[in-house]
Image (tube, rainbow, N blue to C red; front, top):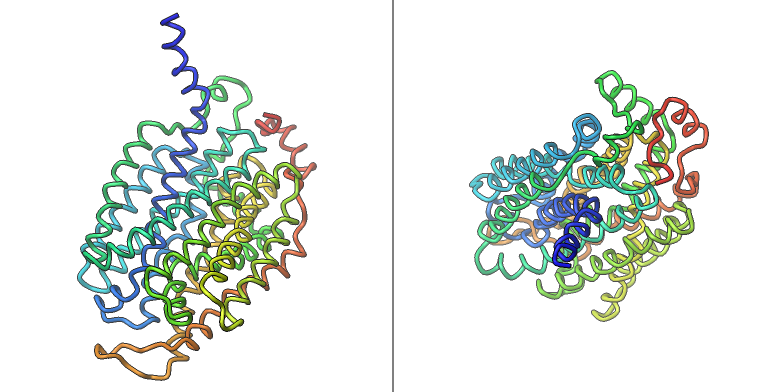
Length: 449
């Protein structure tokens, strides 16, 4: 009996080991999200520390996306070629190096280098998690993992804003970010101890998923993906539907709420967190529903429509009370929770052995929104400003300046919904013709798992 009791934890561990590995990837994504949204509560501190305008601030924060976005293609290729363990470890280490440089920076250019390295390392987080899910879990769990990963990232984002807001005011942004360094060290150790590249049972059978093994094959895979009109459409739609996060939540949302709705820092942070809460709930829920009904496009289009309506209400309907804003921001986040379905669409439009590259390409196109629109919003703010300066010689922005500059968010979401009408439904499966060809080549693995 004692032996049986001792064996039960071992059995439980082995039975849930695939999910444990995927959770390691999710934790890296949490670390990534914490670092990504942290500047949203540091606008004043960063502006005065480096004496910069909104254009320069948008560029500084956007350097994360400038590194993150183009690295998505080699990130997916590296995961496909070398597996997840050491790629994730090195990526996490680079992100920590960037954070250290950012914390200790005493000039704008040093901080820019740190922010760039943070984006470079974090570029591997989401793709790595979905790659782990694609090889360790059944295919019908992919959209669920995509939504759940986004949800835990949102939890990290909400925590980052609520934790950092009072701490930054008390001890400064540099000391406040040191906690993330400790978390990053722990995460690196966890990845090295727990993550494995392939399920052992797959390695010991003849049904081994054939990876892309040469740079020529990688180039051909990327070329094949970029020739797909559906992949371009998925990426552009994902980019536009993600603007509420990549532009509003990541930097400009809290300054907007403080200026337009005259909220203090604590109220603006709490209100912003309602968007995260809605996203947290709906991300996995919509993923599960999508897997259940075997539809991707319908949930994406319907929820995106309501997100656009709610965003227009926030930006263009004056006189909203704080309580009504709480409900609106919660449901904006809830509607945006369907966004991870774009990754499922990207995966299901390509062969299984290119899953990492396909997901990375989708993520690259989606995250281009931050690289493009963060500086654009800053430039629009400076363009619309009346020229009034504070005591430090920096521009003072009026509510109308923020409304003008951030109109790219609701208008972008509306355009994304229009484009989603041209998406082709995958029904949670890859094209029949491609699946047949891969089956003949011995490349179809785990489709019926």
